[in-house]
Image 1 (cartoon, one colour):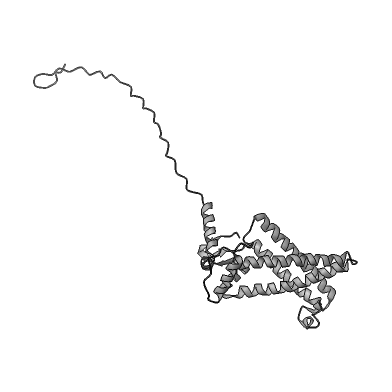
Image 2: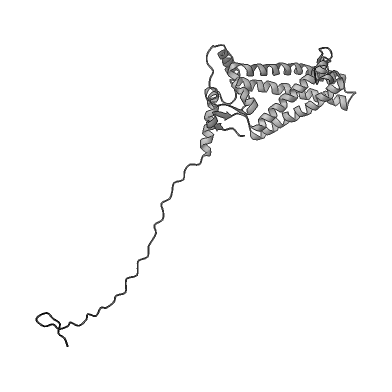
Length: 271
């Protein structure tokens, strides 16, 4: 499902299928990492999570740890795929640009009726900033998590200083990940952003929304579409057909019949 305009349905494709899959793989595995991380503190028994249907395992530290490991494998795999896939494609739409902070402040003010939003490309400036922040948080979680996992599985005698540093980094960015996750949910619930919920679920958003809020992206797509349509070829004039000169008819000599004699009355003379 490539990006394209569907005039007949009043929709425009915002996310490809592969982008939806990687988004939900990171989101769901990240949510499972949050829960299993909380359960290791331990909080499951203290706050009666174990009494909830399907969460009786949450009170067991080793089960929660194994769930955490399993979710981390999917999380890291999805993150690496994201970097590799979009890096090879050269997708740069989510990379922060100069002026994004200033423009984001303007957008936030417009939510409170102070000024109007400027026209946007596919992504909002605050989306690019949030993407960079979340990417940094995820990178630090993966790095510190790998150190802790290596210590648990292969190096129980690892330096205490390294283990403590990795643990503190992991816990701090764990808290930042929770805040970023809540901020992401809160941002999508704002009235101007609600039409994008459809894009997260189906990959498409309303065409009228895109024309109103993302006109630069729409204009770029229409220009690319126009460049893909080949220009009509001029028809060359049909070559003239040379007809061969017809052969002249063969001349036939006509021999006139001898004149018959007639009498003065006009009757033919009988012999």
